[in-house]
Structure formats: C-alpha cells, structure tokens
Image (cartoon, rainbow, N blue to C red; front, side, top):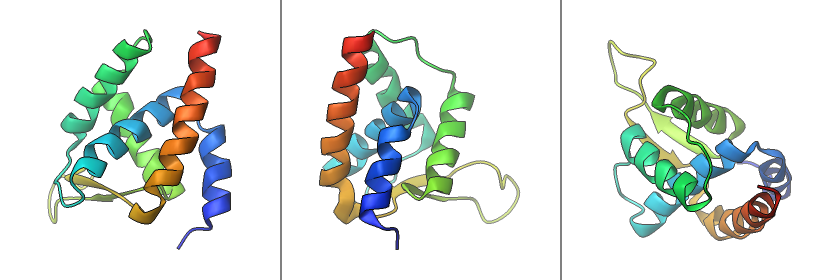
Length: 118
C-alpha cells in the first residue's frame, strides 16, 4: 500500500501528459469501478481531454508508455495477457480506488495551473 501523502506529492510533479492520461483513466474508471478499461479507451478519453485544453496529443504508443510509467509509480495497476504479447496491456485499473477523490482534486488544480500557462 502506498503512502497517500507521498502519492499526492508525486502526482503534483508528473508531466502534463502523464496527468492527462491519469485523468482519462480516472474518468473512465470512476463511472464504473468494475469496467474493463483498455489502452484504446484511455487513448480516446485522453484525446478528448487534450482537445478540451487545446493541447497537441501524443501517439497511442506514447500514451501506453505513460500508462506503464503510472503503473510503475503505483497509480495504476495493469493486467497483461497470460502468454505471448507480454508487453501489451490488457486492462487498466486504479491501484488504490479509495484515493480517487483526492487524485481528482489534485489533478483538477494542477490542470487548471497548466491551462493558465498554455
């Protein structure tokens, strides 16, 4: 289990596109905690967020890289196929679902700051 204060501090230091990817994941997962969210789902939602903030979007491959980085940092938990394509992500989950409201609050504030800077 991750330390919530440490995770919030880490969240504030994430690059813009990592925050947008995490925001896309949270939006998808908060509507249905048992949903099977795929990289394509996240990519579609991420592109909508970049359009909203008038930011150039990254490729699917780079978004996948951000998802894997967020998993490594402890924000997300990904499941992978049993055999074969070990590098491909099957489904994405939030590592600590109870922390979603706090993450949303911090992400909203940080994205507002970013929008002012753009």
